[in-house]
Amino acid sequence: MEKEIITAIALGIGLSASTGFRVFLPLLVAGIAARLGFLPLTESFSWLSGNTSLISLGVATIVEIGAYYIPFIDNLLDSISTPLAVGAGTLITASVLPADSELVKWITSFIVGGGAAAAVQGGTAALRLGSTGTTGGTGNFLVSTGENIAATVTPIVTIIIPVIMALLILGSFFIILRLLFRRKKNKSAAN
Image 1 (tube, rainbow, N blue to C red):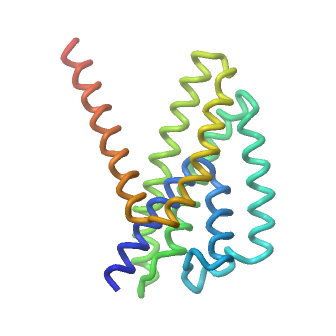
Image 2: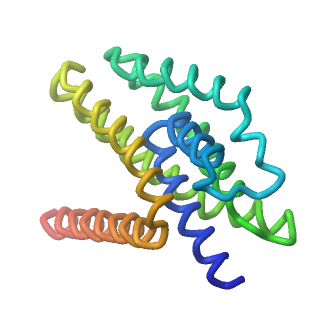
């Protein structure tokens, strides 16, 4: 049971972090993986691999990807996507987390999944805002392409090697936080 919970939390971290890049694409990948038997979902989330969900997520994915290639619309989408990414990260973590208590499942899913999604979404929104400021939006297609690749590859690799992927994601968060704190410390020392 302990190994199952560690694997589920690792899956939750990796899958939810990928919702920070794109909201619907990781959910679509998870639904397809569950349909093919590669991703064990908890019983109450079996709907994610159903025809209606897969079609809906497929259409939403296409619209979301296309909209992120339109300059300035992509920045607007970032403000809308942040709460959606937190919700999607929470949902996708809850879908793989085996917990006897629904309260524990949802609180853990919100903290782990919603937190990972929010951290990634915040970083990509800041990156896109910087790209818009320096290139007038013309360089944002590169940011969007990178996010699309990450939103596709991250959940696939997470499903294959969840613990390693979760450690890579957590390590990346740690390194970025250290760099940010070091930068802030250097700025305050310079003043």
